[in-house]
Image 1 (cartoon, one colour):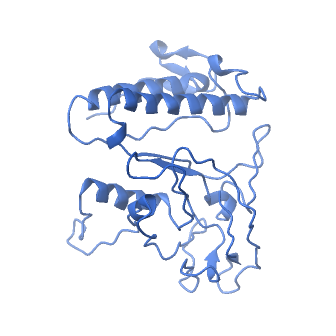
Image 2 (cartoon, rainbow, N blue to C red):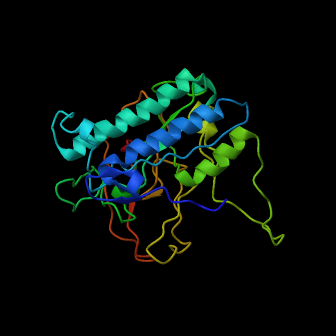
Amino acid sequence: EKPVQDFKVNGEYVNTPEKGVVGIPFLDEYVEQAALEFLDEASKSDKPFFINVNFMKNHQPNMPAPEFEHKSISKSKYADAVVELDTRVGNLLKKLDELGLAENTIVFYTVDNGAWQDVYPDAGYTPFRGTKGTVREGGNRVPTMVRWPGKIEGGSRSDDVLGTLDLMATFASVAGVDLPKEDRDGQPIIFDSYDMTPVWTGKGKSDRPAWFYFTEDELSPGACVWTSSSTSSISAAPTARRRAVSRSTPISAGKGRASMSPPCRRCSISWRTRRSATTSS
């Protein structure tokens, strides 16, 4: 279908979709509303569905909706926006419960990058080296949670090498769909995506043996391929070791912080030797 623009989004404190303009503070109200309407419609049939919900919060500039201002303990705009995001995600989970869809629906929550260190007053820091926009661990290692009632044990967690690239193979596996073996020209095609369900359900380890790193415009040389086969092996510093956990598991950093080693001379990419007690984002 031909796309239709409902309204434009800007940084003003205006909520006027009828005039074609909605300010950032009010955007997530419409994202939530659209998601809830979609779920209502999807519940009317047994047909499988996929929905990708992208809230504005939390991203700089953090401008919480008026009803969430000063609702956080710290009363800061960033913390207020966290409360808003948590509330709206909670409303979607509540809707799945109300519609009787929760037991047969996988909910996957993650973010797109690590903390941004140089934005006042919303700068953030992690225990890891690097920041948003870098290929180091602080830029790629992000909190991830997945809820699948009856399949994933509450409170479980994993430090296997996983990433959002693996969502494609995972969802295909759950849906019973085989990924294409050939492209449109009939040539063999291989996807850099692995089924995460064994890790989620505690029945196996990740099949992903390594994580490749890109600089801004090139792939790291093949000489630097890191594996996760041993706790004493060489592991990529900014690994997207994204956690597969249940919604009841708090995201916290462990104490076994890995040491950073000098850059690898062969490919100019930093690497580290992973200790047996690795950190967790």
